[in-house]
Amino acid sequence: MTAEGAPHPTDGGAPPPRLPRVTKSARGRLVGKVPHVPGMSRRAEYSASTRRALIDVAEELFTEQGYAATSLDAIVAGADVTKGALYHHYSGKQALFEAVFERVESAGAQSIQDALTSDQDPWDKAASGLRAFLEVVRQPSYSRIVIQDGPSVLGYERFREQEEQSTFAYVLDTVRAVLNYGDWSLDDDMEHTFARIFFGAMSSSGASVSRADDPDAAAERVEVAIGFILAGLRALADQGAQMPTVPDAATS
Image (cartoon, rainbow, N blue to C red; front, side, top):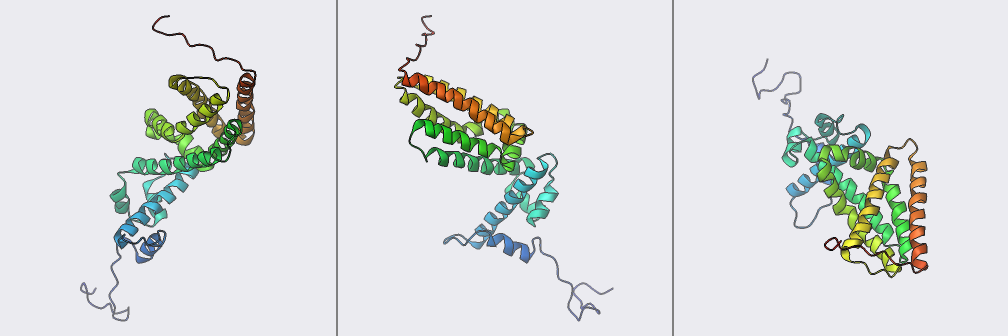
């Protein structure tokens, strides 16, 4: 046995190197994922790269295995970082899941927004938004992370709050465009009522499509059903039908 720091007799005189907490190769891969930004230190770049690596691996594992079956050990091993590095950025598995959830949910909302801006006609806009939504809910990461695990991990109230923040505004905008086509003078409360009805229908149908044995067939049925409702609304608008008056709760 040799003294600490003394040459080892079988290694050519060089003592065995001490392993760093994160290897240089891992550090190089992580930093390389984020291009150099002028004014950002290499430490900040490395920190951003570590977060991205953790979220990338966590998203893949959460999608494939689900939240409950995914361990932090598997995540840090896949990201090639220490568990200490994970806890430096996230308080635990739920906090990391929330970061993954927000990225996946935001990407889905962006896809829907892009579809909505591609059409000017309100009915085409509604149809495009619906198709984009049905495509999003069939994506494996969105289906597993947002729809299946999101409510239980985040809690129902937090889940609904996040969902409304990202997608309700798009539904409201589309509903307003459709209602304006009918030249119906509706106040803000009534427009929000219509929007919440459609938002609730889409949220429920999205969950059913995500969990269906045949998601493609389920999506086609949803598109036909909601499309039929929209067609009926358009027919009423074309016929000049008047919107029923809402009784005043204070005087009824």
